[in-house]
Image 1 (tube, rainbow, N blue to C red):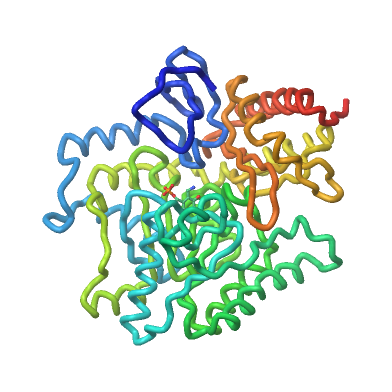
Image 2: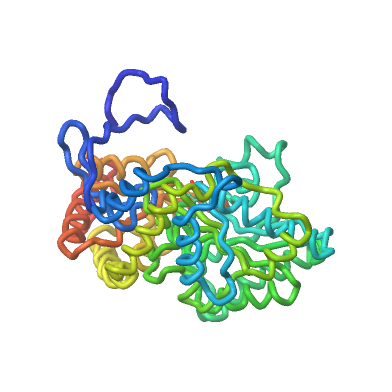
Length: 449
Ligand code: PMP
């Protein structure tokens, strides 16, 4: 945290951070010349690293031609090519692409297309979108209604229609005798119970992050969960929306996290790594069988002014080409398993690390006061802020949250750009080790060795 003059600009809080000067690869420099390793890719965005020369050159060439041409007046080639490229990376049939400027817009668009599809096909009674607690799907009121994170939703409840929630599968907390397979089915069956409770004819869709993001700290469900959820949705004619805003574009070691379990959702929300921070861009990708009836019935009553603008789309296309050219999904898988092992080793020295989890380079660890019972640290200790500041002062950026929604806990996302090397991993782990030791000293937490 730095002391700077008050500003006209404001975000969520009074917290101030240094002014950025420049960024390259996995590093960012502030105006005082201090270097930071971007160990969270911003908010899990900068998947291909910063200032990629090929992407910048593509954007420069596009800027010289046209940065904006309104989509209702002109179509543009970058948008066409990016839509085709995106469709080629999706499961079979998920091939209609609707561009937006960010993750919340992608989620809003998926929910609204689902609803219009229901109306267009005579299923007007379906409007409820079931989601999970905790979860994060965005800041706009529609995306917030399916978000399971009380501090964000509470002030707005009178203004929106809150949607039904089921518990996210926090299997790592369970102390029962179920096998992982049984546990996955148990959690998935919460969806079936909720559908029956609400009345299947009123339920439109189920939305989930295939690997949890900031609200759960990279929560991965047991394998059996994913297929069972798909089956339940099919049984009741309910659309399955995968929010891959954070997990997409290679973050978990596959282009889509859905690929790990061979799942074909009906709608997919993408953003963050999709343009990797080079332009505000996202996409909602839908199965063609949903889009055609909506277009036949008079069109999709939804759209954003900046949607499909040529500059953002040129950037997005260059980013996807980079992910392929450099095999960044493969690198995410390799470096992700190496980093996960190194984080697990830290559990030996720091008994207050309760759990390490995640997939590919979507990794997180959770701090606790007792690993056996997974009792969280007291909220008043503010560990989630303190550890981030310790890392910051050492030139390492990580991302943290105090989880709420069913259970509290401090967790930390360690999600560097997918271009990381083993040398970068050494730097991350060294700085993290020193930061954890400093946190332990300041909060009186135990350490070994
Ligand atoms: N969905 C998920 C899973 C996310 O992680 C986020 C952003 N953290 C969003 C939606 C919202 O994206 P944006 O902030 O770009 O609107």
